[in-house]
Image (tube, rainbow over the protein chains, first blue to last red):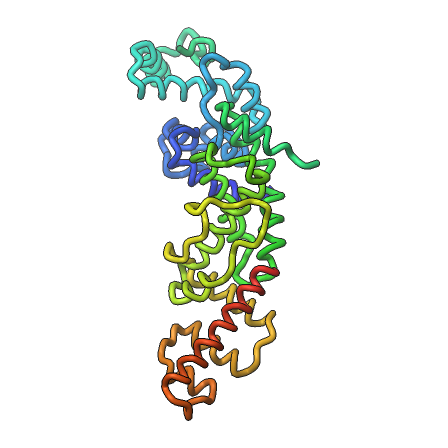
Amino acid sequence: MSDHMLERAETLALENPGLLAAHLRRLTNTPQDARAVALQLGLEWDSYLLLALCRMPRATNWQEDLNEISEATRVDLPTLAPILSKLGALLAVDAGSPWSLLLAARRDYRQSGAGNSDGEDDSDPDREP
Amino acid sequence: MQADFQALHQQILEGRPAAPAVLFQACRKPLLKLLNDKFGMLPGSSADLHEDAAADAFMQYLKAPEKYDATRGAWITYLFQIARSRLLRLAERENRHLVALAGSVELDADMGYSVPADERFDPQNGLDQSDASNLVDRARESTEFTQVERRVLDLMKKGERSTKVFAQALAIAHLGADDQRVEVKRVKDRIKKRIGRSMGDA
């Protein structure tokens, strides 16, 4: 697969808020470096680029959309679900949902290491609002 | 097997989240093949430039997928029309003095899809200069020009505007100013037409 066309598409997708490209970059501390973002998210480069062209799964159709994205991007569900779950929270925070604010705060707290002792995983997509 | 672009386009309209990635994957090869078949023989029409144009076209489509009208032609042809315009626009950008030349070329070969006026190639928006120059160079090589015509074409490429200079190149300096103007225009138009035909046939 030639990456050039896909890479250019991903760059252009950054300007389309309906696609995941720009939002994915917000998940890491290196938003300027797409390859670093892919690496941090544990994604193959081509898969990352394809994921950037996708839209957010619909809350009403979460699991089915997740499966379709997984197939289209060749990212396995255990890797994909937490990424999209976090993105969902991030976008809901943007939209000002109190539940999502709470969810994001909880996630940040856990990621800081302070709340990770119970071993829980907050990436379950079913917990999304 | 030919992808069902119409069905995938419908999925885009329905907001299916994976549809853009699926459609992108499905259309990239046929779209690049169309660009290569049409422009592959032209210098400056590199694989990277084709991919840029194809990606740009796809993302432009994604901005407003509802603009595609299935009654006017196949989806892939619609995308090709956008990509072709984009390719020429990329070429124009680097060679503004060739805008008139490239812009005069007949670009709307019948591809079975009538592109709305606002999506057509607009020479005023600027082409990619080096690529436009390359396109013209390729046409120059692939078209049968006389030596005199080649001299005129080279002057046109340089952006020469003086009728006097063209008249000297055409060896018609002995004619009156009006006759010189008419003859220079006639030769320039003939050259433009040949380049246009060459680009259209590529």
